[in-house]
Image 1: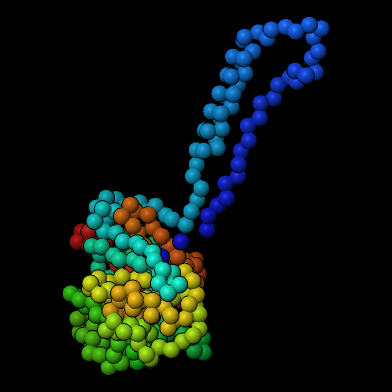
Image 2: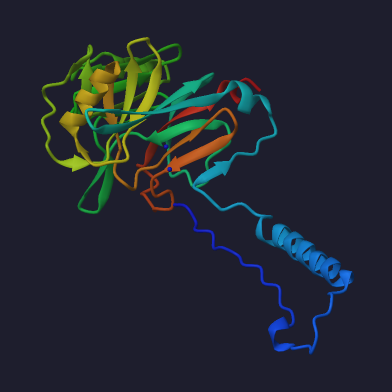
Length: 290
């Protein structure tokens, strides 16, 4: 969910008299106090340099998240790992002690209790009117019922289901149980690459995955790859189910590690349409229970 500043070097110069300009008729021994004075000037100069030059750290793309509840940093966080498979860089984000949900509307300031999040369902525009692409249910309210994509994610009270089915009953269950539901391109199903996805177009990719050990995670890449190559890399990584998430350069993803550092990818200042932009976020259980 990675812009470094260059740090200019500093110089210290000690200006004194040029002893070569002085030509005494006979050699004289230098007074001992001149050496002491020169040493004192050098110490003062170094001290000033350390205070002024090293007192601040260079800015980075990592934010330090400040919260009132210290348990968020300790018990609710994201496990972050990087690897390369088939020459595809993969960044994996596993939430710990947090529960996923859908959020509708532009998030300009990320709440501290949202430890992991990414833009979820695609949206499109037709004659100036924006709409979510594919079926979409948020907190039991149906906003769209299109079946244009086979992949889906259903977020119910006690379970999260990722699948590949155009007529799944989880859509109705999400409405009945006040849950969430959205559709996206299916990438991996039952540990195999979905053959319906055949795309050689290279772009940044992002996905919602269930690993073979049952854990949910987000996996994305910072390089342009085809959807086929990305899906194959996910399968080799050990993903049993995966659907795409918005993965363009403007789509936002963030993750907060155990130390409270938040890593953000994407153009978070881009003004997406507020009535259709949506996210899947993991909210800290600590916050949710209080």
